[in-house]
Amino acid sequence: MSRIIYINGTYHAYHKASLHVEDRATLFADSIYEVIEVKNGQRVDEQGHLTRLSRSLNELQITPDFSLSALPVLIKEIIRRNKVRDGFVYIQISRGTAKRDFFFPDPKETPTTLVLFARSRNMYKVENSAAKGIKVITTTDLRWARPDIKSTALVASVLARQAAKEQSAQEAWLYNENEEITEGAASNAWIINKQRELITHPADHQILKGITREGVMRAAAAHNLKYSERPFTIKEAKNAQEAFISAATALIMPVVQIDDALINNGEPGPITLKLRSTFHEFALMKG
Ligand code: PDD
Image 1 (tube, protein in one colour):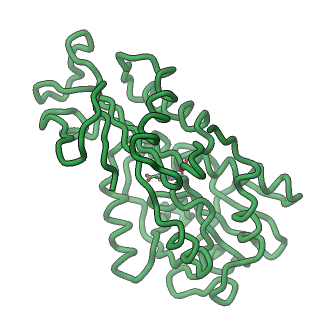
Image 2 (cartoon, rainbow, N blue to C red):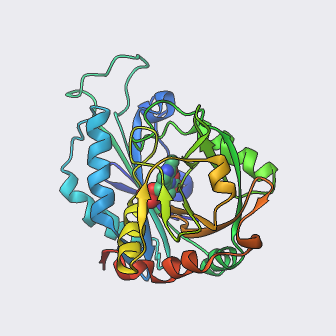
Image 3 (cartoon, protein in one colour):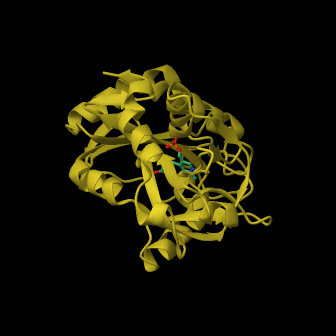
């Protein structure tokens, strides 16, 4: 559990940390967020996450009332205060607190709300899960039309993940009207075909352009593996040689079952495991 939470310049004990009921994040999901992996006390690909955070703010026309260049210092401090060695940092910025109204509040009277927390993860559990691989279900993509923005409008993803859990799966792969897998509820989706080619959906408006996804591409190139960004169907996925998901919270996690179809006889695939074990060699680590 994260014990210290940062809200707009103040560090609060976990149970004392709260947002106003009329914060735009709670009323409208009028807010964006980022999740950065912490490994051995270092921030993984921090710059990539901060660049995407800035893009998400621009897309929602939220102008923070602080300089984004302050974030690395705050991120380091929240990691330190929460004594996180392996885990993640969560950053959220909302349009601020104002009387409920669909129009934007006047930014001069409405400071944005900045929240940070950091949490440790049980790496033993994560590694155990990676050794076994995970099951995913496929379900319709019910999200809004701009999942490329990392906004906190996540209720469709919550429902998809819950549906996965109820079918003893760990992730839901979302598909569009062409029965193409776009991405996971909170991860990017990958398959590897019989020709050892990695395939993932193009980074258009239908998916979040994952920072880990970019790391996978760097790792693949370093291992002389071909990858392509193109849509793939549910059928293609179920016939894949290997499959995996990528996200700052899961890294590269092997997928061994898609609905009722076993992938690689229900075992994590060798290419996936190689990418997973070497991933951090190709990531930008900041201490
Ligand atoms: N989710 N796609 C979606 C819809 C996501 O929510 C995420 C990450 C990703 C992977 O992005 P990245 O590699 O930059 O983490 C793709 C975070 C981890 C979350 O919501 O907890």
